[in-house]
Length: 150
Image (cartoon, rainbow, N blue to C red; front, side):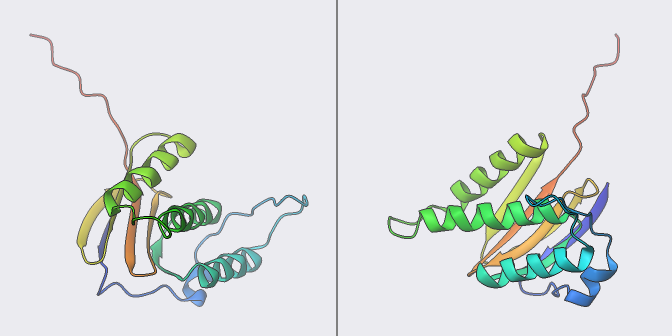
């Protein structure tokens, strides 16, 4: 388990250079070749710019980061013409998406201002802002609690 603390107003942004020094998995794209880490970072940066996202901290593999950004943007886009979805409904939908795709025990916090200190599994943490909202998505381990014999 790893610990992360965040504050939507105080957390520094990870620069492109800092991200290049982190281990990035090689992704296989539809055209069948492996992306090198620089291409992955550039693709993620381009996506972030297009979606008005500021990635603040992450230890999540690039393909999962991309999934989080795309799914969050799609949820926010759904609520634009109609009455806005509440932050709670958006957080629930993002949590359920990740529970379904990457296994149970995901947690999501969405808001305009919050602080946090969470324990999470390695490779299961992302903190970003999109438009005016901050999003914290992380995975924890689940252990079965057994009653001791009487």
